[in-house]
Length: 149
Ligand code: DQA
Image 1: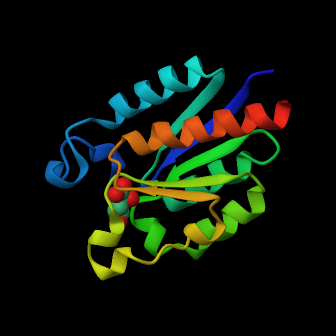
Image 2: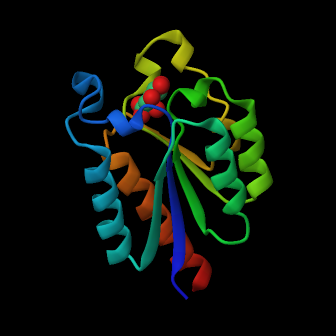
């Protein structure tokens, strides 16, 4: 059976392409979604792709991943730096997590240097632009292949 990777995007990421293009680039979230689907599909993975500006909705999607999803890729946006609730939800889901940031948060304001999500993430990709999503999917493809071998 094909394994599913859940790609989650937090607040303001629906504004990708319009919002601070000097920081986040000119691609839209729809472009990122298409790339993830094509790239994941080519590696034999099904990609579920979601974005929300509502923290409760994000928590529901994370809970629903439990026992269903092989890996989560999450760009939690500003909730990275504020949300103990998302941290707790990711633990409750018991699904591997890769944290992605389009920008290199460590080169930016101090408040972006702390992440609640990194504590529960297998790995973190920051500063690779939207390539970070593909890199995370690629990691799941190779680690799932190894676990099936
Ligand atoms: C971001 C970085 C966060 O600090 C910011 O709040 C975002 C986007 C990134 O992808 O670089 O919304 O997660």
